[in-house]
Image 1 (cartoon, rainbow over the protein chains, first blue to last red):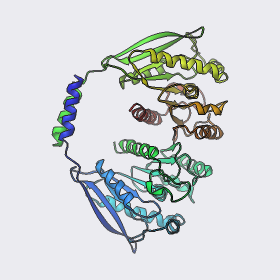
Image 2: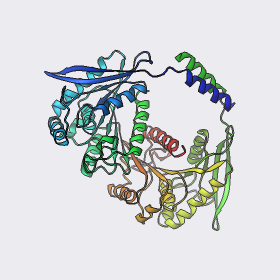
Image 3: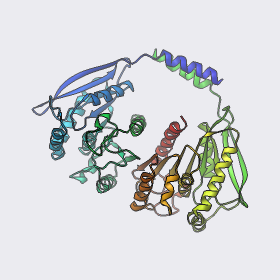
Amino acid sequence: MKKVFSILLATACALASPAKIVTKTVEYQQGDTTLEGYLAYDDSFSGKRPGVLVVHQWLGLTDYEKHRAEQLASLGYVAFCADIYGKGIRPQSIKDAGTEATKYKTDRALLRLRVNAGLNELKKCKLVDTKRVAAIGYCFGGTTVIELARSGAELNGIVSFHGGLDSPTPAAGKNIKCKVLVCHGADDPFEKPEDLAAFEKEMRDANVDWRLIKYGGAVHSFTQPMADGSLPGAKYNERADKRSWADMKSFFAEIFN
Amino acid sequence: MKKVFSILLATACALASPAKIVTKTVEYQQGDTTLEGYLAYDDSFSGKRPGVLVVHQWLGLTDYEKHRAEQLASLGYVAFCADIYGKGIRPQSIKDAGTEATKYKTDRALLRLRVNAGLNELKKCKLVDTKRVAAIGYCFGGTTVIELARSGAELNGIVSFHGGLDSPTPAAGKNIKCKVLVCHGADDPFEKPEDLAAFEKEMRDANVDWRLIKYGGAVHSFTQPMADGSLPGAKYNERADKRSWADMKSFFAEIFN
């Protein structure tokens, strides 16, 4: 009986259509600023499906996020990489990246406008089931998707990968309507214990549906091979990368159910 | 094509054998003490399979752990509920439970002997693939499975559900050979921030492969309906219960791969 099951399952898998990932560069606006995002979906799927916004780290939108969007497309989602900085603004050095990211970290109102513009662009895609939408972000993008939630945006959930968790306005936690998953490197030197405690308090006080996973042995940027050698305290960690991706998939299975 | 896939998959599932859970009460010894455990497996599976030890909360081995063992059996594992206290020692009040648990929490050497006796009993079962073994535990049992790991026991992983994480001998972390997953209620009043910090330090210093998940809104005993009304700060939380069970399953998928 088990053999029959295995043979049928293998046959069924072989008959499934192969993935055909379609990607597009998309210009859109926030106020007077032109932004340049990146859309990815699997053309072998039919009908509407959940949408996932992907927010870049401090270097701006790079091939890294585009690859993540393609991975999400392969999983059956419509993925859209937001551009927070603006078309053509892609810092080439750590110094410039820091300067650019700081502009938005110190102007959360502008950061919210920019990320919401990306969310709206994702929702405009006709393939997206607008009742099933999430956002994920890396480092600066992790901070950004939490800020998206704090803006009161309508979406099912957000996932921060090694994002900064601090908030200049912790009371904004009460605006959060979606589920929150934080994937955090247990040895991340850029998040102080007091920042973590303040974030937890914000979530608790606002009665948010949240989870935080600490990955032992992981520091900042644990999902990003390009981080190696960039800064002390930032390093790729394959184990934590794979686990956090799996945890994101479980989270999506729950929120898109 | 999608339809063909769905029909084949449905047919394959319908052909799979129905579960047939076999359970047995098992007497075993640790030193001069007789212990009474509980074995569960699915008789519709054939061949060796991973084994999971289940360690009880402070009331001793109850129907709660037996049900968990049956759930694990349904998932394809051989499950064995250890008895730490001894045959017939099943406290009926919180006061007696506290007294009994304290005996072992303050005598970690004895606790290690008792839990290792359970692990050995599980491994004796001919259906168990002894190279693929894990242990899970609830509250007192969570503390106990971490102590099992600290004893240097040979197993693939342990999962603590709302277990106490403190250790009188943090240097024992260096003995840990298995992967560690801690499922923790973010609002658990019985685990102080300093206990969590000490546990993380123990894991870090010993270079353990560990993860800790904080479930927002969950307090102590969040997997146990029977905790409701027992103690302030202990309460069932269905959301965190389901999530932590799913997280355990993902962990098993990884460690038994």
